[in-house]
Image (cartoon, rainbow over all chains, first blue to last red; front, side):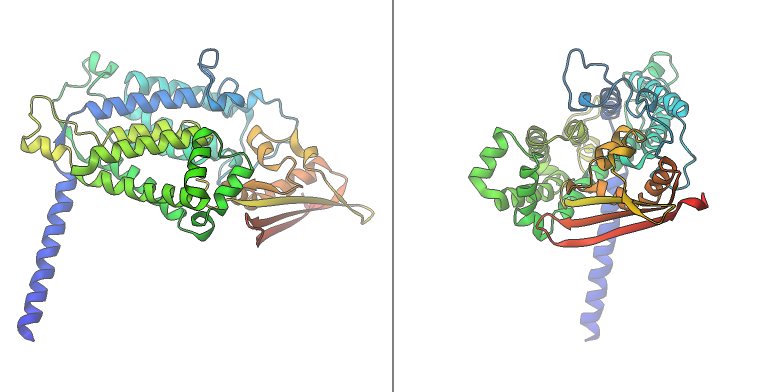
Length: 316
Length: 104
């Protein structure tokens, strides 16, 4: 009895040590700075595209139907007083049209600074705060993909995103390092994994799984298109619902394992391409694709793929 | 996103100085709201489809009652009710807020 208890304790201690060692490995190590630069430029571009109508004369995007000039700039809405004041957080001070205009201009300027890499970490955290506050001035502005976008901007402030393709680098304010710390990459990867798991867990209810929700979404015209028709006819409402939920659970599992990562990226891209073709999700698909890009095996410059550092660079 | 949508309906009524209740159409408030609030509130006397906006609206009834009082300053009270039901028709917990307009 005493012997088996000792063995059990020893096994627990061993497992704990292994878990601790794995956890330490997840956060330590180095990667090439390239993914941070690509992610910074991609997210800044998404912010500029989503919060303005800059490209409307040439490219049609879903938000161009309601965004004129700068999004959330109520100075262009010609409201009649008294105005409804309903902030997302009760402690926010009363919003003024002039303040919203200034913040909307500031948000655009910060996105431009982030895009070109001028003090990008400061620009990223400021952009996250200004973007979120501007959204929170009116509770009805809240949309999941915007919430996710502003959180992402704030997270970019944690990354060494100025070391490539930046004005800071060009001006010599940042050294061209071969390696960057790996933990910021892992933080961003975890953010994506959490987003998938949360989306899937939210669908683990009978109304979703038996197809009732998809029937209602179709009735409201919120899912449509040839791909939806094909999917619905092939698998039925319940089948399509289960498939979406299963994919949202499967993609993070595939991404976590280094061996299946490329399949996970392909599955994720396919999932978002399909969702974007069937529903109005604005820039959400592109945002997720940028996160998926972070799971590519970013091998540090000057290292071969089978070097130890390079191997670590690719694992979650 | 879109994992647990539901339907909602909004009713606003005002009590005038003679003690008579009368409905206030949400469209009468539309010009006082931003674009996004209009999308959620205007025309919501009829059952509407939504998800996150239902939660946002549920927590914003008090603010809506403030606006109703200001738009109709001659009234005594504002009453705002949010009804909710699931996509298969089952009734869900709604919310009601009543405000004394004379207090403001």
